[in-house]
Length: 67
Image (tube, rainbow, N blue to C red; front, top):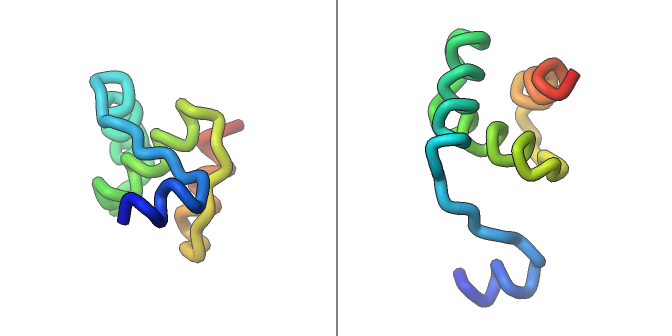
């Protein structure tokens, strides 16, 4: 796993209070959004990173959340 992360340029980000609050807000605003997806999306927003997903609903929510 560590080799993959290093080779892909992926960064592992610790969940802090800011990310937890953002994820909670996303879940409140988008019913049915799972915690894992909310945390990933919150991290992408906070880090101003591109969200890579095959989940069309998550992609749509990401577009709304960044607006």
